[in-house]
Image (cartoon, rainbow, N blue to C red; front, side, top):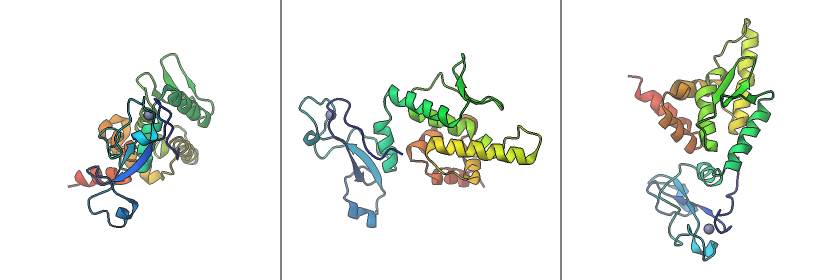
Length: 216
Ligand SMILES: [Zn+2]
C-alpha cells in the first residue's frame, strides 16, 4: 500500500491527510480516544504548502472538495491513484502477478488462459475500477471455481487465485471473506457497494451489514 501522498499535480506542493468526524469537522489525534461523532479523513492542500499559482490550494481550515473518506488508506489512494501512468503501472503489476496473462484484441485481460479467468478492460479508466473488476469477476474463483476433475487440484487452483488476487489488492482476504465478497459484489450485482467497499479501504463491515439486512 502506498504510504505517502504524492505531490500536488499543479504546484508540486505537499498535501496532507486531516482527521475529521463524520461531518468533516477537523479533529486532532486525541479525538481518536473517544470519537463520539464518527471518524473520517479528508485531504488538505492549503496555501501554506503550495505556490501562489496553485489552482486547487485551499484556506488552512478547508479540505480538498467535500469528500470524506472512511480510512486514511482510502484518502491516500484517491489522491495518489489519478493518472493514466498509475493505471498502466497497476495493470502491469497484475500481469506480473498473474504470470502468463495477456490482453486480447477485445480488450479482455486474460488472467489465467487455461481456465479463462478474465475481465473486460475497455471500460476501465482508473486503478480503483480495476479493483472493482478483481472483486466482481475474480472473487468466485478464489473459493468456488472447479475447472479440474479432482477436488485437490481445484482447491490448489482456488488457493492460487486467492493468493494472487490478494497480492493485486495488497490484502490478505481469507476464503470465507472472499465468499462474502462474492455473495455481495460478485458478477457486478451491486456496483455501488463495490465502490463503497474499495473507497472504505475494504471495510468488511459494509458487507456484513448488507448480509444482516437481507437475512430476515
Ligand atoms: Zn498545489
